[in-house]
Amino acid sequence: MVHINIDPILFRWGAITIGWHGLWLMAGLFIAYQVFIHEGQRRGIDPDQLVRLLVWSTIAGFIGARLLYVLQNWETYAAQPARIPMLYEGGIRLYGGLIACTIVMVVYARSKNLSFWSLADAMAVALPVGEIIARIGCTINGDVWGEATGGSWGLVYWHPNASIPAHLRGIPTFPIPTMLQIWNAGLLVLLLVLRKRLHLPGSLFLTCMMVYSLGRFIIGICQSQKQILFGLKQTQLVSLGVISLGILLLLYLRTRTSSQ
Image (cartoon, rainbow, N blue to C red; front, top):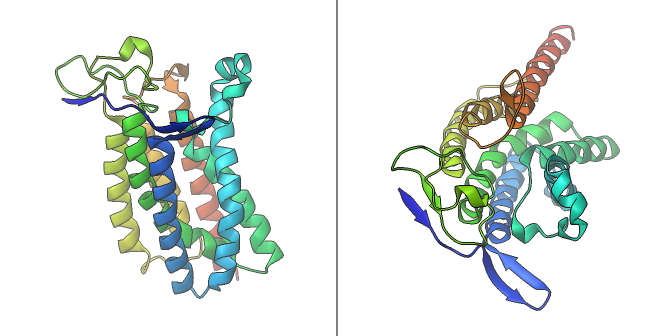
């Protein structure tokens, strides 16, 4: 059993607030972007183009990740709209950030005559690296919580500023952030093995998204969310959608390549 009694707010000075969540998120982004630039250069993409893309994708990613979280918790934020920009409280959704970044990458690739799928494959390896690091902040913040384990093991949050609901404070819960880190570590190893074996542009990225989503579906069983459809939770339904879309796109790429 791991007891967490750390204040999620690391530093506060007037209106300026810095939290552990934001600190580790920025660390994860920084390392992930270094990996992305390395992978892009390995694929022959101009590093200056990669840096420009990073600027726009970072802005879009933050907006998309926060927007999806706000929409998923609209009742709370509709009543307190001033809390929407308070990222130090935690509350982002990776899928929202990925959707926004993908849109930016499509637009940028077309405007600069670059291969979108090569950019996506370069990003694939960076994604699990960034999440492994960023989830440290989620562990401290308590903003991705699991169901009660019902036993004497799990994460136990005590600090009143933790994002975990009050009824789960002081109760052992499934360590969702740690489970995601372990899954992403396995995903990273898989991608490093496959990156020189998958020659079809886009296949590495789609493999990354499908395997990642499979993990989110499985781990979602232990995550504390309301069941929405057929006994499945929101994260699980989104994961199924991403897996289905990934399969369709992979079949499309293979068909297009074989017909050329």
